Image (tube, rainbow, N blue to C red; front, side, top):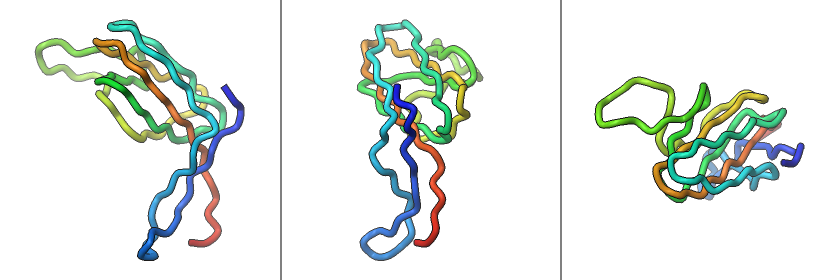
Length: 116
């Protein structure tokens, strides 16, 4: 994994309104999950945001090992198919799916905005 982290920034849309914009990430981790087998990735130094993409339903946990819930409501820290989340450098993110699944994890750092 590269030591470069891509920045995010505020931009303007076509109408001139301020909006959140992402440039393509230079630090993307990718894997294919085997069914019911958890995998994890360590957040690189400098990253404060992560953008997730999945090819199938995937449970993600930033506080421990991701688990797939059973047939009843339970409280825990695994989320299904999150999209954009804040992260802490050096922390571990865990993934699990009940089917074979491709996962892409793009990391972003803070970008000082001077004017928009």
